[in-house]
Length: 283
Ligand code: 7PJ
Image (cartoon, rainbow, N blue to C red; front, side, top):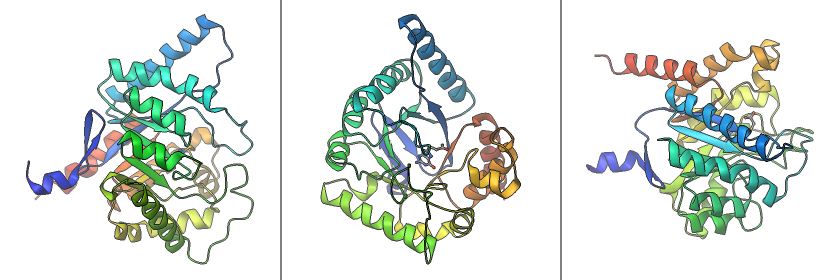
């Protein structure tokens, strides 16, 4: 392996993410389960089939989440979150060739899912929960640090910035320093501007426009805008009609150098990424 290659290869547990290319991360929400054991099995099977379809469509990462970040969502205990997430992580690891990302802020979920084959910790709270820095460090896995102010419940109350891009950059730099203090090297970190988290529409649009400034932090960027309200607000579209707006943002993010696109609509986004790559690799 040349030194240039080693710079772009991010070990994710037993798999490697080649950061020379843009990757599509498929979203897999593991919803509350109030069914009997029979229902539980079919729900697990349905989740696995959804993951399988996203991998077949070209997702190289699957982001498994068991705790909703929607404002007003019911708090989930660590045990409840683990019971939602662990079985699907285990099944995906056994049956699919894909990097499993776990969308969690919970130390116990980080430790246990790492043991079950997860390859990446994706924490919208940037390891700010008690014990999360140490738990993430102990897994040895890479970590995605995302910008958010406050908690999902209150983050949209009245977000204020003088310069949103600058302040997001400062926040992420501070979280990288916290990571370094517990032994999580910069080489293990992915950064995310946190679109839709503690930001108005104007904040989201400005941050998106100036996203390249975050490359100064020297780490790959992950962008998650799929079906989000910034599309709804800009285009006046309900959640079911945000695909084209989301694809426009995915194309822009890719051209601006984002390396991972976190999306619901995998097949469409994979075509988009492949088309951009075809043009960029031309003479
Ligand atoms: C994000 C996320 C995001 C990262 C969610 C939703 C809300 N993780 N988890 N970035 N969003 N890293 O998908 O609408 O933007 S949950």
